[in-house]
Amino acid sequence: MAGSLQDQLVKAGLASEQQLRSTKSKKRKQKRSGTPPPDAAQREQAAQAAAEKRKRDQELNRQRDEEAKRKAEQIALWQLVRDNRIARSAGDTAYNFTDGKALKRLYVSAAQHRDLAAGSLAIVRHDDFYELVPAAVAERLASVEPDLVLVQNRPELEEAEDEYADYKVPDDLIW
Image: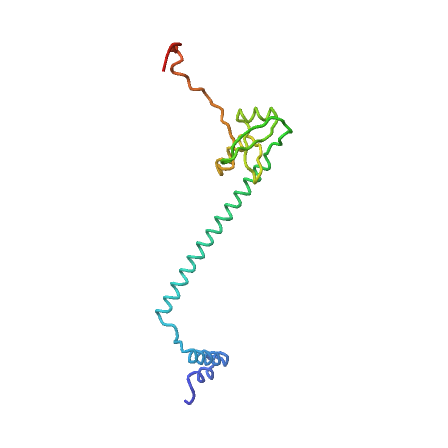
């Protein structure tokens, strides 16, 4: 029974010459590098590191999905404004409104001015421009992104009744 166990396994046909060479190569590399084979503590650390990496990757994937969803919603809003905008006819009536702290002016026709005041049209910001859209579209935009809707007049359903309408104010009242 001369020979190593590895030689005996090869002779019995349980291992191949290639497996024998690769095992010897691994042993030589470990001796040169001076690192012992991984023990239970190292395997546990490796498993914990892999679990943390999976957790980080899942969080990054979730953030990417949220960003993609936000971009898709933004594109949908842009398309909604673009598809439903009302062309401003070359009007001479100025409609003044505020965009943040800046006072802006939009020239519209008399009919569009009346519709803006009545609440059937609204002014929204589309990129760096201002567009007229129907009130229903403005409400949909406001539900998702309220900062885009700059002017949306809502007509009062019922004027509040004056409780003191029956009382006459004296003319000689001095304050």
